Image 1 (tube, one colour):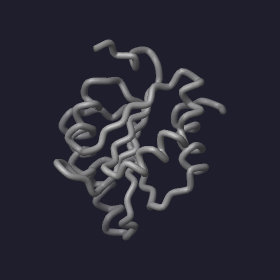
Image 2: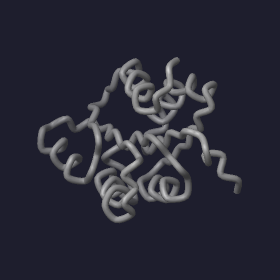
Image 3: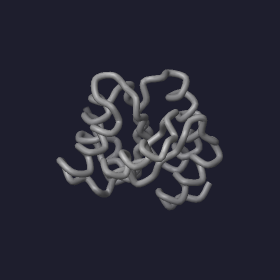
Image 4: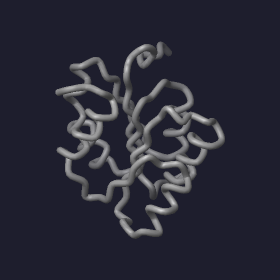
Length: 133
């Protein structure tokens, strides 16, 4: 399979809820017009596999997922595989301080609580990818 992310910018969405994945894809659709590739995974292990196989700049990562939770995915990416260049925003319905602390310990760069504001997702992605829409 050709890696369309080589040389360009890419976003990886990892969430087990189909409607959240669809909302994030729709929210970030404008970035594809700027050459950003958007890839999607429906569970943690597939998300980790995609993160290792493709060059991503930004990952939107759900916490509670089957096969591998977001904390484990994040810890693998940042610590085991040392892919510190991937900016990870963890998305969760659990917004307690203890959850944020666990996300930070796993290596997450940022933490957003669901329901999230699509405009905030666009703003942060724009800043992280250094792309003006």
